[in-house]
Length: 246
Image 1: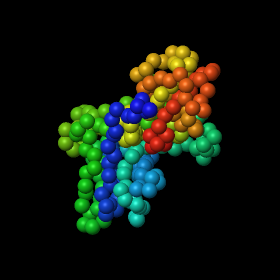
Image 2: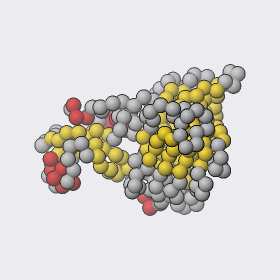
Image 3: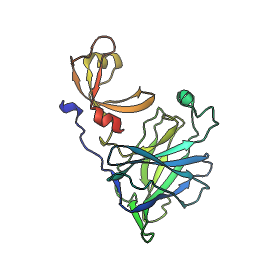
């Protein structure tokens, strides 16, 4: 269905072959909570890998880095940056994830980079000098999490990224990602769903799917769809390949 096709596809950041370490320059704003940064990689086989870069540290510019697993199937892509606010062991359990709220901080980031195994050369993968292709991971925060370029306090160059987020978490994390659809997941919905929700084509909405918050955009409507019942609250149809990439 044409309505399920994304208007744009966000590019992914490819990790160069021969990379030993990934890192980023980071500066938490004063008063930010005790946060840990994860980088999420996707290998050529579609498997995702979490790289723990450790705690953000004091409110000053510094690089944080971590080694990546060797022998990953190429191409390896950086698909998300996630911030985890540590809680006690009980609170971190998945069954409590929907009940938790975090502390709303502001984080500055600059120069996501790779350190090569041969010679230790540094390759900058993202300097945030051009338009930012990243999107905040959907949460139920009001106002929503925001990511943008700023000239307020770059580490290097003219601009850095500024990420400000609220208290809501999505499966215990907040952060930003390279959306495969370039935005919310395109959806075709039943007319009964529009009537029940009050939404219109072009509107965006949040929904919980398998315990996580996902942002959708109403691209088109349909009266009927095979195996779907339009009665009651109606139905939503999405491209599952795009959905599971989020």
